[in-house]
Length: 302
View 1: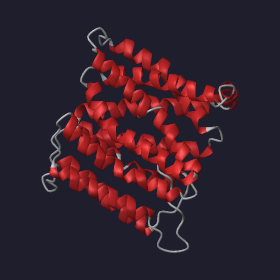
View 2 (view 1 turned 90 degrees about the vertical axis):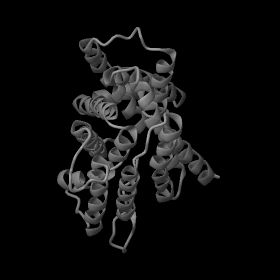
View 3 (view 1 turned 180 degrees about the vertical axis):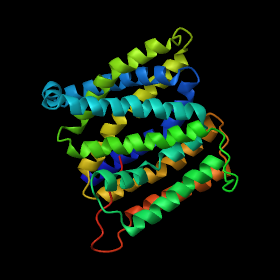
């Protein structure tokens, strides 16, 4: 029964995450990246406050923050503030199919950063996985013109890659976090929101022209990219006895996302994007394959 629940939670999370690239583009049609970050963070915080209240965890917020305020301030500035601001800007500059595929290489980035900051050994298969994944990134960024190395938006590609560094860095910092994960994520939003509001005021972009469709889109992003879906994924991992099976569900997400981008907003999916995505996924699969008894378990994808 628990396994069915776990698969249900996992599939729900994957399906919701598959829709967010489309929701990003719909939202960015009316919001600037800073406005989008601000409003989506507010929506996420409200959703997570309700979840924490239902779970009886609200009383943990102040004690958790006061136990190490500098640490939680740093986490909040990285995610959601810097990570999502940079990710949204990458989506603003690139086709969504390219941005989401490049961002998907974050798990490979995590392996490299874990070697540098946590002293974890990089296995031979990790190097092979890196080669496949970053070749996939180059294929996507150059639209298959590997020799020409011409980028439609070098800044967009750079920001998408920078987002993988921030996301991987956030989870490396989280290895020392003993707090309840939902409480920890909520604290990040509560810390980031005042900074996001300050940036939006400094930017001075108008809010009056945003339509009902725009508000609905940014609410959807806040709920299902940055809020509720994270709780669904955690619930799946907690309910299962087979973490690898649940984690592997995530591999379906980018391909479903491409189909939604093509059908809902009519984005043209370049053949090179699909080839590059297959290379990135191949690298991630190689990374998770256990070749022998000494192979350490693959990290969970979140």
